[in-house]
Length: 218
Length: 150
Image 1 (spheres, each protein chain N blue to C red):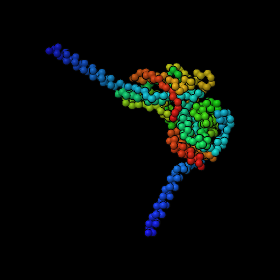
Image 2: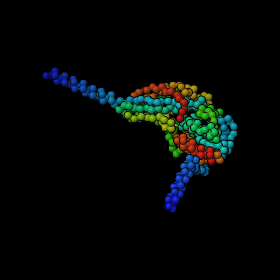
Image 3: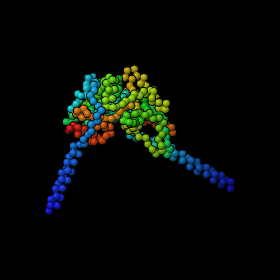
Image 4: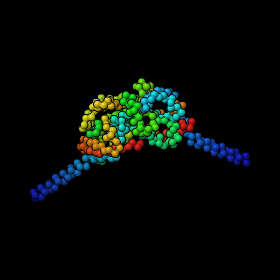
């Protein structure tokens, strides 16, 4: 008889522990804290207003680096983030800020950035600034970028065009556009400004959303 | 007797020619373009990208030696992620093996259109691109500009 009671208690205990595991799994995993990645910085927003990263505290931030002349990965990333953002509820969207920091502040003026970001989602924030400001932000997040000169580094020996159209042909000043290699990490930052996860374009959207929700609910 | 032998010779030559012809015909590359599209460019963009599949359904490899577009500079590039950095690598003389394909997709191979006029690369527009292959010659493809719906 005592054995049956013991067995019953064991089954109940097992059931309770299984239930608690299920609940903690549903709440999302505990994300680590990436010390030394990120921090406060100054920049200029798409309206030309000076901002600090601390202005975004109390929101979960997804921060990425890129530039508007990027033809492949930056539009792809912003398209991915737009899709991700659209899967959040309206209430969740208010608690999440997507930030795109340009690594080409010379070309990506605030107004320019506003138009570019607006093409994807007008709620996203584009940040520019002086080259020193951008370099500081890049170093804070342990990111990298490198300028490529189109005319010097892309051999056109075998790939020609019927109408030779070169950046140097442009006369309106906007022809100074450059190409860059740059970090593609998506930094998931909690409401206190700490980097909690490093994601990439291509992280399954549901997995990314689960992490964002976990940080919203912290 | 001589006449009969000459006839046989003619027949043999004809047979040989038809075999050579069929072998030659079978060994041609057959380049096909599928699902090509160009990403619509934001108003301030100077560059955009095109994607799709170039298939070689033939029995011989062919080499893409040239790409032309009247609307922009165009090149075949590949985005490569190395140590967390997106690097753009120019591709020249891309060989497409027999019964193989070259897939152009985001974050990988892509047509890089540079120095564009964004209005020409807005949703609904058609961009004519000429692809020149070593064996297949020039193939002209009209590529639609579509919204970025990743």
